[in-house]
Each structure stands twice: as C-alpha cells, then as structure tokens.
Length: 80
Image (tube, one colour):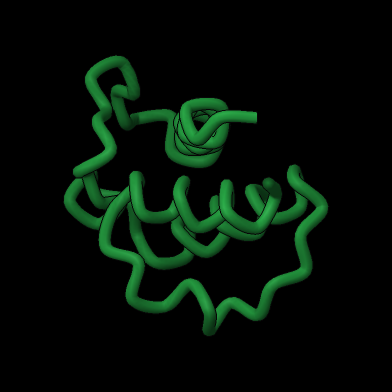
C-alpha cells in the first residue's frame, strides 16, 4: 500500500465527518484545523482512520502531527 492510499482514506473520512469541507483541493500540507474541522471532528476522523486500518495506537503518539501528510505518513508507516 502507498501513502497516497492512506491520504485518500483520510480525505474520504473528512468528507464523511465534516461534509462542509471541500476535499477536491486538499493537499498534504493542509491541517484539519485550517480546514475548519473542530477538535471533536478531528478526533472522530483519527479514530475512524485507525479503525479502518485496524491499528491500536495510543492517540498520544499522534500528538504533534501538523498536517494531513504527516498523519498519512505516520499511519502508512504503521501499516507497511
């Protein structure tokens, strides 16, 4: 699996959890907070993402990831 697949999964989850966000122009440098996604929605997206890939990672390990690309890269490294 490639990192792009994880990024595409994140985009789909953003569309599901925060349908007002236009995902067509999303790039890896975008952050969820810059997109107007609140903290509850961010948590839901991350939990759904981890569940999708059947990962059991303490959420504290995700602290400090600054953008969608870093999140995709982190998840990709755990799945690969």
